[in-house]
Length: 161
Image 1: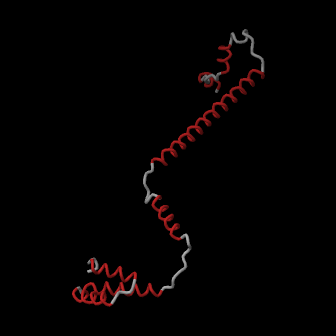
Image 2: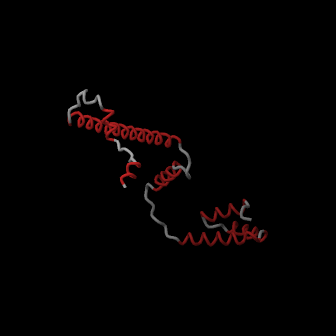
Image 3: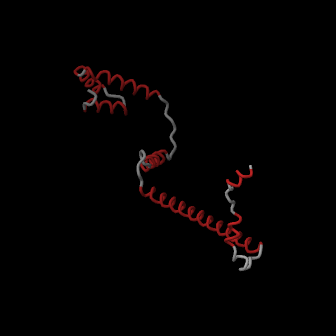
């Protein structure tokens, strides 16, 4: 079986060096007793043989430091999406301040626009024509009633026909 300590020890030894004749004899005896592990050993042997045929690649002098930095970077990154309150709260606070400031600016602009329009209208009314005298306003109700349309007199219309 592959998880057997003896088999694991021999696999690790075969990764690093060629097995000795004594180790190969022990392995053959063990494989005869554990036939289901033979396929695992054949795969391990084929993989080891393929890896030994690969050419050696020159490695830069700072290879180990670069690998360790990459591992540290990978460990420092959050795995998956998770709530990070130390980052999320300041962003929400900043967004809230910006939205409130923009709302206040728009409100202030609206009030300023309304006041400007009101001042223009007051100036137009005040400068356009003089105010009527109080005597002219005495009969205001009578004048107003005269300008309202009166309903037609049906009796008079029928007589005229």
